[in-house]
Image (cartoon, rainbow, N blue to C red; front, top):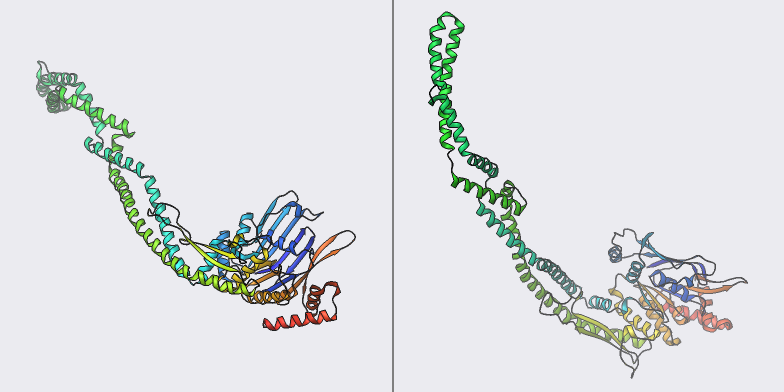
Length: 569
């Protein structure tokens, strides 16, 4: 509900502020006073395009501010979805600015937003029907939403939407896995090749350093054998070897050991040397035999080292790192294989989910076909009351064909039905989609008929604006229009610009819009008529203009009294 509208520097409007109320609110005033300017200001607030030409002469900036009261939780939820942030307060303050430079800006609760966001907020809160443009009810998607609410098909619609969301989710997963399928199969082949390659190599930790040492021994085997056998010979095997020399020295030392304790020590130490020398000689003999040249083993070692270095170059890892890398390949293969299996599984799941979605769409579509005719028939009854007795309103539903392939085409947002409300305003005229009806009066009355039927089914758009609804309408029909607007005002805030006193008399609240001039400037003002006397005077002015008389005032008073009695207040 729009609680307050403030406009500064818009054409003839210098600074106007109006506080509005719930129910049926009427704006009246002579032609050219500025009623359309105020509705234009509301349009700017709801995201319509603006121009610097609209700025009042002498002003630098045009500014429109509207304070909307969110009276229902559905409105807060819808606003939060658009703004992508929680809406805690009941008030939503929209601001639109246009600078002389042409720069435009928008604010919601003092937070800068794109003008497109302002437009989405406006379409969420307000239905505008008039000579400039009409909002929500002309949009087939919104008509379909209200049709579902009217027919109490919300549960069927939600069932379809959930299944459609599931299909979109599975489609995304299937697409992602499918797009990666080629790369995944390459990865899977590579993993298997590497595993077989490394398994065939039979790598062990620390192998390359050990082989390198062994190769060095095999390369120098003859030299090593010559050295160790020579050591053995000089220590024990040759004439005059160390062992032989030690034997003579030990024998001589024993002869002299009794002469001095120190010589006895020398004798013992010489005796201790002989086993060590003999053992060392034995070791060298063994080594000399082990260091025997082995060309076959050397060739084998060379090939093994070459293989390890080849693997190191191929994988960019040392042999020890390759041992650890091999341990990861089984898990990697399992993950890749799981993704391959998932693709097949998702394909089956997607086909099943797609079938369930089509079933839900079919059930919803059949229910809509029954409800659509009733909606059109109920609205047509109101059209007859509103001076369009020959008009015919149809609800045409065109089905969207769903392909057999669950990955083909778009998933419809709200089912397989495309609803189009078709109006034949007069016999002999062509039937036109409601959004293409040219006559502002016919369109507004059709909208009023639909809004009257659908009043209880829209918890979000609680402000309805009518402009030009009384175009080409006489006094008798004006009385009916007033009754319909008053009835709609019981569930919605209705803002109507009208020239008919019969319509205005049914308003719960009325404002008069005037244009005042001085020698220097002309300005538009808006004033609420808070007393019956003021309203009677305004109605009399609407009936007879400046030539109004006491008789006219009595007629206006009777009109107001009758309207108050009729609307029950």
